[in-house]
Length: 524
Image (cartoon, rainbow, N blue to C red; front, side, top):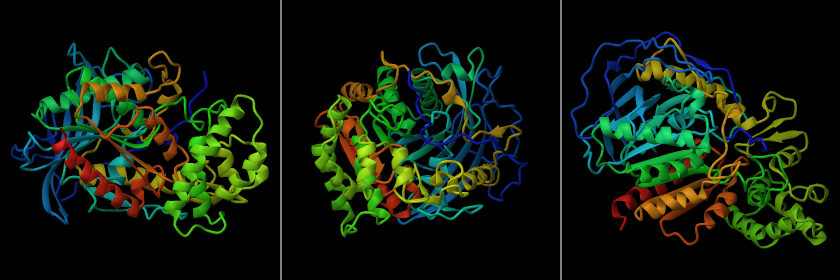
């Protein structure tokens, strides 16, 4: 079996939390469950404590006894629509198997619940990154929570820290928000007799997330609340399978948000290093990247129209030609010059690698430079500090995100621990990829099954044009397999894998997301 590549984040050493310095606003509480119950009164303030559990991300690690300690703080966010008083909860919750009730894993999560909300109508959204093996710090402090880091992306500047600010694009005005770390990441860990490794596989991972969501909804009195799952990268594949699991188990789900999707590992040539897979889905992203770096001449005056032109070219000319090439036909000579002009590369490059993979494109677009995988607008000199770890677009954000997560947990949320917080574990090295009879997973049928089980289920797919890990047009091609679907909305805009780090992209996505949440209330 081909070995899939890491999808959203590369491995780095585990993050260590420093001793607690309590922010003036923060209070900490221990409780047996939960993170807020909509219209219930806000939880009372109690003295701060430190969680002394020795969490581990070792594949064979497990907890003999799971703590459900949680830190609770009362905070306020001011948006254009008005001020929101909310409860922030950081801690652990045990996921029990929905059928047997057996404890499975202790999940670390951070929940934000608007005080005084109507629990029967106010949605709860569950956010998670992918990897597999990534904690959810990227979505937590980068996207639509009440706080965000100011990254100024796209940027080639290495900085030691990002400012943490109130997030005026937060979704807290339309939904309660729960950011949850997968087993073996953050401080989430299996409960004996299971081990972390027990949940390091496509199916087991989705089921234990199902169990967490079911328990969270139950203990917080949110059984009537609309629920949305919001996954990024590998998290989108998890979401498609999870949606079917939630529907089949009777837990249910109302909305699925797919950000930077990899729904089918058998269709993305950048996931596995095998040229039997077509790279046709990458071509529009190559074109958008070439135009951004002004390698396309003349530089397009209307980049949106140019990207749509590249989509048509990929569908009508390049895609069929690559399929024929993989089957043994020679590349059409007349196509090479057009490919070079469309992407800002050379005809020689296309002649040598007609089914052009993203790594080769990244190495060859800008002479002497490496462009980013997660955001191809960012580049670094070959051999320089930005390119040293293989992806300039990850290097510029990783260290500041890890530091900010550490500081925010202990200062902003009053949660500290003597254990480490693992931003990325080695779960991918042990991952069980088989799913539904295939050695590599394809979750498009799972999403179709979930939509069949729930005729009201709505799906929103979000992508960035400059993402060379999970290209936007490959997502479109995968979703086309479902046929015409009025319940699926697709948006692709300028931006990278973590589109929300770009201020303009985040604002555009916030608008589309607000419409999506409104549609949940009006679904027939």
